[in-house]
Length: 169
Image (cartoon, rainbow, N blue to C red):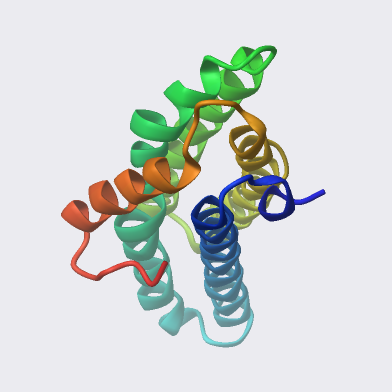
């Protein structure tokens, strides 16, 4: 059962569906940029520096502000639910790892190191998104007294204050 089908209010279902799609889009963009970096490393190492800088900038502009907003808004609500504390603690730890990987990617002294950091970032982020979409959002959808639409609106507002674009969800 997806978070969308288990949400009780239509506005919550719509917000959860949009959040799921947004996270999938972010993961897809990370994967696309990592693939471009891998291709450049093989075919045109001179182009790799710009691609790497673009991946770092994307993560700093999109991924990390979203993670911070989740920690401030979604995770405290989810942490109050029965049996969710360890899950949320693990996701917070993954945010720290994602941040460390973005920093390592940006400062890697070699292209090989940057490629390794980029691939690790992609794998971790894809797993993180799977946990959020498959575990956290459904928990919120099923929890009495929690309005996922309100939480996700606050997340979007926090992210919008940190980035120059308006989220499409």
